[in-house]
Image 1 (cartoon, rainbow, N blue to C red):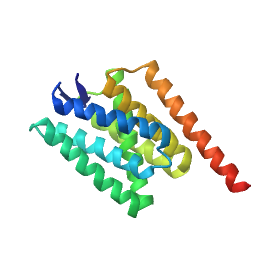
Image 2: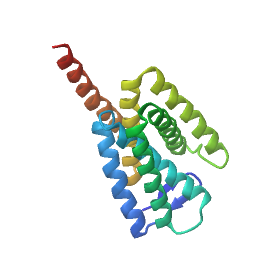
Image 3: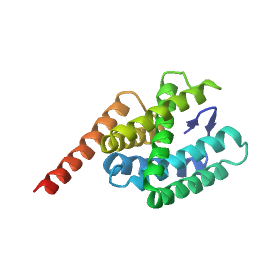
Image 4: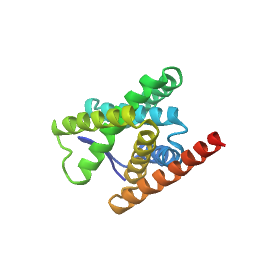
Length: 185
């Protein structure tokens, strides 16, 4: 199994298998409860961003890249707990950048310096979504990020990706509607 993080692919080693399991667990959690567990969403975005940066700029062991990703993820999760609005804005940027690079990679547009332009555009879109549509932005971005993590870990994409995004939005949207109904009652 290989996992693609921009310009570098992580090949099949025990570390990559562990990364796939972590990605699956995070992906499912984000699909189901990304809005409720915003700190997990922010931490997952930090983990993926840290892993992407480590694989882009570090030629060392893959396990070290995973550790860097985990450390960055934990830092972002702690920031989310203590500095909620700033951390969610940063997570919107990181998740938007990650999501757009995964989508660009699916159609072959994620190469070289262009991948950073794609990341920045996705990040700006992610921040704007979080600013203007907070709950629905968290639902959408966490569903997209969860679907991206799951499909990348399993080496699948296309229709499955879209189906997972829809499932995540429907589950989290229904939870949000139930919460709003109980507040009104």
